[in-house]
Each structure stands twice: as structure tokens, then as C-alpha cells.
Amino acid sequence: MTPFSFIIVCFLYFFGLILFYITYLTKQRSEKRAFINNLVNSIIFTSSITINLFIIYIRNPNKVRFIAFPFDILMLLFIIFFIPLFSFLVIKEKRKIENGKITFEEFKSSSKVLPLKYDIYRKLTHLVVLGIIFFYFTLGFLVQNVFKYISELLPNFIVEMFDMGDDIMVFTQNLVVFLVGVSLIGLLTADFIRILKPKYYPLKPVNQILKEKELYMRLGPHISMSIGCFSIILLYGLIQPVGPLIICTSMAMAIFGDTASNLFGRTLGKRKIRDTDKTYEGLVAGVVIAFISGFTVLLSLKKFYFPKNFGLFYLPLLGSIILGFIDYLDLEIDDNLSYNFILSTVLFFCSVLLF
Image (cartoon, rainbow, N blue to C red; front, side):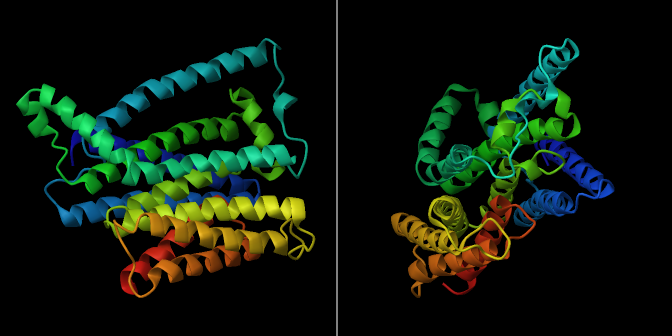
């Protein structure tokens, strides 16, 4: 393993330890729902990194790289600059609190059910994840050309030391891991402060889009979303081209299905599912929109991988049914994690084994 890869992996495992520590605190405080959610997030985060390294080692024992050049260097630079910067913001917030300029209660959510506009804001942030599709199958090609041009300007010994390779799908996989990885590091750093030192959390206005149960020791929904995306990219992105295509399909189905379920349920839903806030109208809308989203993604990317035996129809159908079943169960685990992880896992193995 290269030194850069080793440092990055150690840093990610360190974050994994913090996740388990927060999980332990929720257990100590008897916050059952937060404990289950945090534990599953922690396990998936650390195990996906471990399995990714194992797969890379099996493929090439002499060249184990978690993130290939130049993204390992860029990730280290991000860590070096971001952590001190965010620490400065925390210290600045602490001084404001101590000087009485702001109060801790100022930005807390006061409602169990978010106003509709804040719920829409939450769902809009999920659409950012769709950028992964463009980096996998469109923008990644342009980025590779830029780096190839830069490498031509560098001395040969540097280019040979940090070989990008010629496989575009390998390059885009590394690019996506980098983009989602730095996003996750930034979000985790902020959420650790929100949970462990809530008084000094410098992004308190963000609390307005968090539900009451998400304000304390429970990891935020954006963390579950990021860990869900990061884990499936590490686990299945290496198996190409089916892996990236299933990842993009699952993400699109999860994002649009969840958004439709929530918004239709809140605006048009009348029949409640048991004693939850979810409705059957929202569930049906989520299933339908998820199927349409999955079918559209598979159809638009068919030149990269076209599922045989009617997989173009059956994969999104199976995925939408799974999404509806998870929605009906209303698990303690955040939907942003369960949708992405379960959906992509089932569709990946079905695609490989059946289609």
C-alpha cells in the first residue's frame, strides 16, 4: 500500500472509531432508535472500507491503492485544509457563546414534523447525489482528459510514479470515490461537533431542516445518505461496468422514490400506515416514481450495459417493490441509508446472477 493510501485509510478508520464511540454514547443514554441507526451506519462505513481493500488486494497484491493518483493527494490536501478551517469555525462559535452574542437554543427545531418547505429543502439536497451519475458516465471522461493533459507537462518520473492508467471506468471509479469521500469527511466532521459539542456547532441554522429525533445523538440524514452512497460505491463500483450502472440506478430510484413518497404523502395522503406519519398514497407514489426512475436510467445508459432476459424491466420493478416494502416497514434505520444500501445490494447480485 502506498503511503498516501495508508494515511487516508487510517484517517477513515479513525472516523469509524468516532462513529462507534457516538453509538456507544447513545447506548449509555438509552436512546434506542438513535443507537440502532448509528450502529448500522458505523458497521456499514467500516466494513465497506475493509471489503474494498480486500478486493483490491485480491486483484493486485503488489499494488494496493485505496484511491489512485491524483485523487489520494487531493484528498489529503482537503483533509489538511478543511480540518483546521472547521476547527477555527468551532473556536469562533465557542467565543460567541461565551461572550453571550448567541444562544444555544436559538436554532433548534421546535416541531416533530417539519414544515413542508423545510422538507422540500431536505429532498433537494439529495439531488446533488445524482451528480455521481454524470461523473461516472459523462463528466469523468472530461476530467480524465484534463489530468492527461496536465501529466504531459510533468516530468516523466512523476508520471511513472503516479500512473493513472488508461481504463476510463477505473479512473471514474477513483474520481467518484474521491468526490463522495471528501464530501463525507466534511459532513462527518461537522456532525461529530453537532453531536459531541452541540453548543459550539457553527452551522446551527442547519438544525432547522432536522427533525426533532435527529437533533441529539442520532446521526443526521445527510450522514446516512453519504455513508450509504460511499459504501455501495466502494463495494460494487469495482465490478465494472455493471457495478457503476447499478449504483446509479439504485441512487436514482432511492432519491426520486423517497422524494415522491414524502411529498405525495404529505400533500395528498389520507390513509396512515399503522401509527406512523407515512401514508399508503405516498407509498404507492414512491413505488411508481422509483420504477420510472430506474427504468429511465437503465435505458439511457444501455450502451454501457444492457441487462439480458428483460432485466431492463425486471430490475427497476424489483427495486421499486423493495423500496415500497422498506417504506412500509418504517425501520429504525434512516431511509437514506437503507434505501441505497439494500436496493443496490439486491439489484447488483440479481444483475450479476440472473441478467
